Amino acid sequence: MLELFKRICKTQKCLLLECKADLGKKDHIHLLVDMAPDVAISRLVNTLKTISSREIRKEFAEHLRPFYWKLVFWKRGYSVVSAGGASLAVLKQYIEEQGYDD
Image 1 (tube, helix red, strand yellow):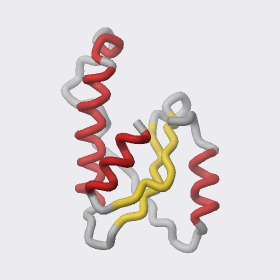
Image 2 (cartoon, helix red, strand yellow):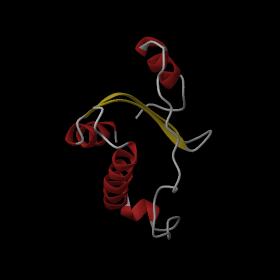
Image 3 (tube, rainbow, N blue to C red):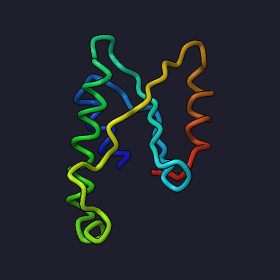
């Protein structure tokens, strides 16, 4: 998923700096993204969710069949927090300490 998210971000004039899934504990993914100022956050999130959902369902169709019956893969909501004055090192460390790799 990491490489897929990187490719999607690149097509949206963004750079994925860090990514970590916390699926076991809190069921979410942390992304640290450097965005161009003219990129709409809602559009980036929608693109990430749409394309990754399609690819996950395609790649893991057999495994998901007994558990997955919904029309949507991701939940509707998302949270976005600006970095403010925090350094990239601090943000990357926070994300690295979450959940699982990839």
